[in-house]
Every structure is written in C-alpha cells, then in structure tokens.
Length: 164
Image (cartoon, rainbow, N blue to C red):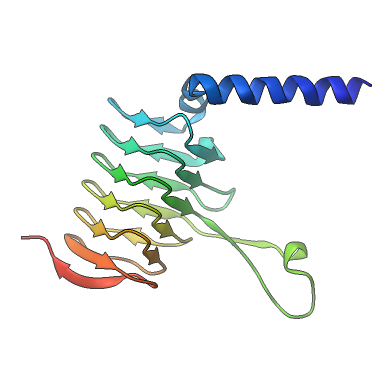
C-alpha cells in the first residue's frame, strides 16, 4: 500500500515537472549552468551533477543529455541542439559470454566546444570531443572527435567541409 502511494506521488511529481518544464529542478542540480541557457521542458538529463553548460546554449525539444558516473559532459557556450539530439557518455559492453544488460557500462567524458550546432536527431557517443564552431548535420552519429570549424554529416559522422 505504502509503495503504491509512493509510486503514485512519484508519477504526479513527474507530471508536474513535465508540465512546468521541470527546469528549476534540473538547472539546480547541474554542475554548471551558464547565463541565458534555454532548456525545453521535454529535454532529459541523467546525472545532471556531471553536466556543465556554458552561456547562451539552447537545448531543444526531446533532447537527451545523458552523463554517467565515469563520463561527464561539458557543453560550451552558444551551442544549439536540434530537436531530438542525444549526447550519451556511456555505452554497454557486449561480450558474447554474458547478457549485455549484465555487463558493466563503458563511460567516457564528452566535450562540446563553443558555437556548435548539432542538427536534429544527432547522436554523440561516449569519449568524443567536438571542436569549436562545428556543424553536425541532422541524423549524424558522432563516434570520433570532430575538428574545429568543420561541417560533418553521416553515420558515422565525417568531415564534409569547413565553415568559411
């Protein structure tokens, strides 16, 4: 009975956070929150105490910023997240001998520089650094470091040009 009540209250708290944007909770728990940051109400943060966000960054609708105990996430200033972008600093091991869910996570930090634009549904994987001024095209999967001022696209993301 007590557990049912606790679960019901938890559900109401989640609903309240969703409806109000929940930003007061998320922003309070972030390791660093720059000035003028805008976060859409449907954005999701995991381990917010492991996430730093620079000034004037915009995190769009349905984005996930998924830090991990061994994988902090640092987002620079003036960064734009397209809708549905995901930055995930953890991965699963997948050795054949045991269930994937039973294997330990493989965490690694992610760094996103200043003036970066991640297009809609971009995925940034653990251990990646994205240089200043990078543009990542919609739907790309970033699995390795991207050099400053590059324009990148594809799965996996690769440099297709540079900003002038």
